[in-house]
Amino acid sequence: MAKAYERIADELRQSIRAGELKPGDRLPSETKLAEDHRRSVPTIRDALRLLQDEGLIEKQHGRGNFVRKPRTRVLRTNLRHQWEKDRARETEAERQQTGATEHDTGLGVNDLVFYAAYREIKASEEIAKALGVPEGTPLLERTYRTRYAAENAPFNLVTSYLVRSLVESNPDLLDETKEPWPGGTQNQLYTVGIEVGRVEELVSARPPTPEEAEELELPPGTSVLVLRKTTFDVNDRVVDVSDVTLPGDRTEMLFTTPLERW
Amino acid sequence: MAKAYERIADELRQSIRAGELKPGDRLPSETKLAEDHRRSVPTIRDALRLLQDEGLIEKQHGRGNFVRKPRTRVLRTNLRHQWEKDRARETEAERQQTGATEHDTGLGVNDLVFYAAYREIKASEEIAKALGVPEGTPLLERTYRTRYAAENAPFNLVTSYLVRSLVESNPDLLDETKEPWPGGTQNQLYTVGIEVGRVEELVSARPPTPEEAEELELPPGTSVLVLRKTTFDVNDRVVDVSDVTLPGDRTEMLFTTPLERW
DNA sequence: TCAAAGAACTCCTAAAGAGGAGTTGAGGAG
DNA sequence: CTCCTCAACTCCTCTTTAGGAGTTCTTTGA
Image 1 (cartoon, rainbow over the protein chains, first blue to last red):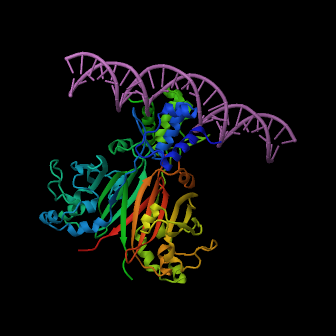
Image 2 (spheres, each protein chain N blue to C red):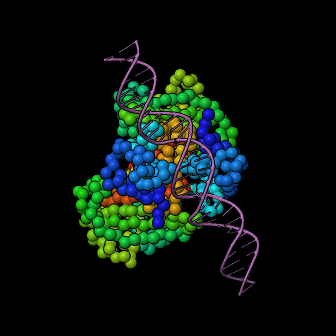
């Protein structure tokens, strides 16, 4: 005695799983489905929404409903921290010589990064806690975005926070026209005399805010993966916190743990 | 010129973010909201669904719509691999002495684990690829569930796969009444003479299947976090693959990367 | 006193209908 | 041939109306 819209969703789900409807295929129109199933259009729409929330179909206003193509991309995360540390003391010239980016960040050479300059802010309650400083401490904040060239789709959205007093020896900090610290966080911190001792990464998934949904071009019903990276110096003080927001429907994160031999 | 249901959702979202509506509070009933906003009930329901998909409210049939209480739980993942390896050669007695479970798995002593015995299966295409064996290779598969006692809520859902030929020296394997390998994967593998060299963990988020949604008691609109753990031996052969499925609305995963000193 | 029945609330499923808005392709004007 | 307009198709928003189903509290009857 299942509900009509669930039965219809089941039926379509079967067709998709069985491969009768392949990724990219257009489903019959809502009116067509309504006639076929002897149901009203709103009921059909209820069924389609279920499938949309499961990530099986994608609705396109004016065009139709389509079976979604799965596409995922792996982001290598923790393995690159040691690599980055090893290279922090290289000169710019040396870095250009070895310069592998693909392997380490998951970014390709054609991918686009949109930087924004650092802004001065006061620590909010949440971020103060993460940085281990009192609320209201002067911070530097910036957000940047990356677009993946091959798919012409947004790849991530990064916000990072630094304690102002720790890094003010860098003069390019508030200059909008310069990328003040090429070469990643580790290198950035090395230039102001900080040695990194440990990196913690906290991963969670949640529904996007409306702003994130727009920014990352997320279809309704998909969630975002959030990675909060906390960097500690060798004295175990927090020196950097950054939040990476990734589209949950096309990202995987890889963590590698090498173990010592017996 | 925003749409009515979006405007109403915005308004309610504001109230929640501003704290006028606190976690646990009941929202005005749908008919009440409809009267207040001079809109039809279905329009109100559209607005509420938006908020539900954002994880801000929870609908309860017959009771009302409520502001959700955030509750998350941290799962420490990669740091425990080395720890587990170090202890794999301890005897059962030694293990009971040191036996810390809380720190390492995120599990408390009162939490409930429901085991199922291993079943013999043939490797499917996907899982064969993950294990690096030909399709159809004899495998052992089992699924188990954990419930978190304090919240009386499901905590995870684990399916693990082993290559049959690697582990058949363990006699308790297919005995339903015994937990064949107390002490975790590393210990399990040690008993059949395998030394673990590396662990890879691939994290992704996706909408739950209808079965997972029921099993993990997920409210509509929330996704699951999936962690595929691949264990390699010291010769870099895959010896174990397991999928951990976690409720996205109440789980965070922590990865720690210690770095070498200069 | 106590349990069963019921009223009054809640959200859920389903219908039919009207107009809006985005997309596509056919046909005609230049 | 190229560009523009328009018709026809798509999904989207919103309404009104009806009954179903879960929850809670009050009333009623033993």
